Image 1 (cartoon, rainbow, N blue to C red):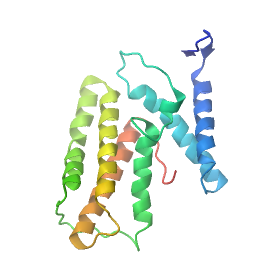
Image 2: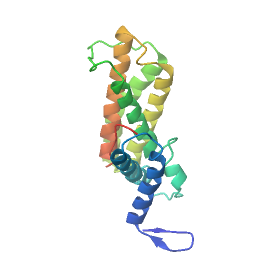
Image 3: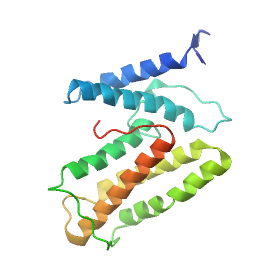
Length: 194
């Protein structure tokens, strides 16, 4: 139960319904089939509410804000889901199915930063389990999404060739898997489009 400024109680179901409705307004502007828009709004709205709660340390208070919670920028579920959607978009644009080679070569700083952040996933999950603090996983996922967005801006994936393209596709694939797995551990679904 939440309390409004006027002292009224607002139930969780009402908060979730409002979040889905607000997400639906944003999704309505996209050129997607109506049933897909509805499904995406549900994923974003429910995910935003869950993430807003789980991303905070359980012993601290926080200020509830619809704008912050549903923002595509910053430490929010929509930001994380958007990183996953961006990755899926890369693979949809490929000619055919991605064929990954075993050998990768990290030549750019942004590639190395992303690979290093990916290598910290097991440690982040371990810390969550040890301290019962899902906010640690949320923080890791935010840092991963932020690192991925930096990589995406600095390292063109589809315009690269040879081993560089393979390396970047592998980094994208692994990032997508880690984001999806991490969000799933928080009880948050992903979507292929947004």
